[in-house]
Length: 280
Image (cartoon, rainbow, N blue to C red; front, side, top):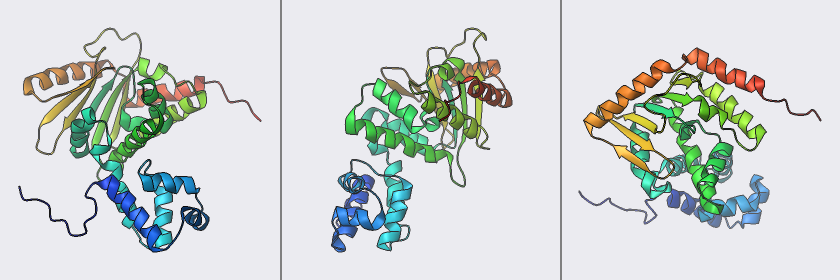
């Protein structure tokens, strides 16, 4: 395979290229970080973290920089590429992330946690922190996970079906307000035309996926692969016979689940059961 022709001499890695452009644009205008903060209206520490690659920032600040520098769409485009870059994920997950990005259909079963595409930032942060991540690495992985959620947006998003055990919905966050926000997000996402959400309530009996978190990906070439995960490791399953057996098990679990309408009502009732926040 011929090597890619490099003309600009700048990085070909999306995250590094984004930070290079941020530094270049500011330096060309002779601005300090403090000057930029005064002109754009964000804290200078935010720009420092973005230029050093510690964070990518959010779309609002990137749009503000595009407007300030007179580069309509340039920084937003680079930011989108950086957010979607599989290289920002931990190495053992990168193969799956690359396949997820090209999938045309996704099916998921969650026995204990919510799929990354459904998580709010606070849910992702608490879950990743429980797995041992700390400091800047934790924030980077939260940011990367939030970037994945754009997969379900856009003009032609893939179809996504998730089956959630009631256990996944009863394992709340330590912060009640953050947990309410997560349930509200699930209720909102369940109304999107490309998302189908099922709940398997307590009392439906034992089934074949009770100890397995699994996601199935239908790829552009027609193949279906599965990704199974537990607290220790994840495994990409590509052998046809094994994938088919897992799919049959998934179909059996779906038969036990509530309908999409019943599942959304289940989540709304959970929200109603939550204690109201004290009035000020």
